[in-house]
Amino acid sequence: MVGSILKKDLPFIGKEITDWTQFIRRGYALSFLLYSFHDTGVFNYLKDGKKRSIKEIAKKLKLDEQILSGGLNFFSNADNSIIKDRSGKFKISKIGKKRIFANQTLAMSLGAVGAYNIILTQYAAAMQKKKFYGKDFVRDGRLVATSSVLTGQANYPWVIEKLKKLKVKTVVDLGCGSGDIIIHFCKRHKELRGVGLDINKGAILEAKKNVKKSKLNNRIDLIQGDMINPKTYSKKIKHKGDQIAFNAIMALHEFLRDGEIAVINILKKMKKEFPGSYFIIGEFNKASDSEFAKIPLSKRMHMLFYQEIIHNLTNQALADKKTWKRIFKKANVKLLEVKENFPFRLVEYVIQF
Image (cartoon, rainbow, N blue to C red; front, side, top):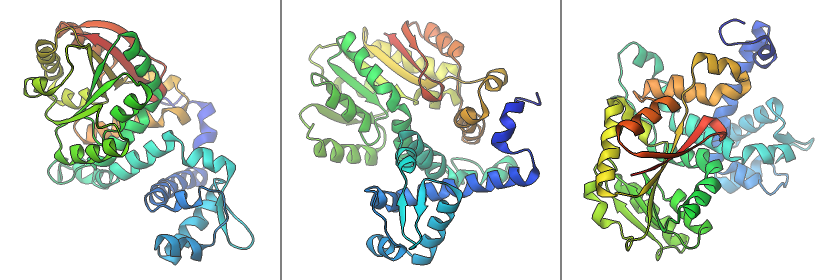
């Protein structure tokens, strides 16, 4: 073994220099094409399985024919998700439909490429201390929120069942963004009332549109507020004395940049304002080098990307299960359950204040 790369991993990355460089080139190009074709509506237009010409697609979506042609030609020659027939028309293959519209693909496309490509172009400058995250460049928060929703969707059925078992009547989604999670919960749990909380005014306005579109105005309230100051929003949450639960997916780790004490203090404040309430927390489980070595190379890319590149570049921190358990203990909250085996090493913690 060299580092954490095993012999069985070599076919994945290529044994020869040419194979290795072309492997990188293909992934680089396809990642941007995936995002671009989703963003411009190309994939949605081809979703029905019909064959369409470049001219037809370009006219429908008001795109440049030459650039569109180059992208689709590359895709059809580099991957079998897009097929080009002899007449020059394109369609999405059966395997392509499964891949292109999968939540895992959308999360990667919107998050890794859409939200973070701007900061990755500044990697060298940041490493040389010439530019700084938050001052000279930032991620796209809207796309981060959307990709987080997609990443966490595999957990939602479990969370909803947990809310039912705990007899929760009101759930508060912290950092609700566009409201997708709280809408999802309320659609699938008919007796549940929802509250979406976000510090961003634009996010709340977008969430209001989505709640109205989903016809859930009578069951979902939206509040602009800061999750780290529960005293400022505790009285705004209408729950009629029913059991409350809070939900946060990949949100608390954002505060670990200020040390464990920052998260401990948030939990202590929430306990003071909402005694007896539940908090369901979804967070990545930070992996060690030895743990990465046990994961096949093709399956460790997501965690490697976010843990080692993105979170260091954006001055964030991740924690492992041991650290989270220590945080809960110091905050004097009761840890009821730890649920693992979700995609992307995501772990759900259920605590009670």
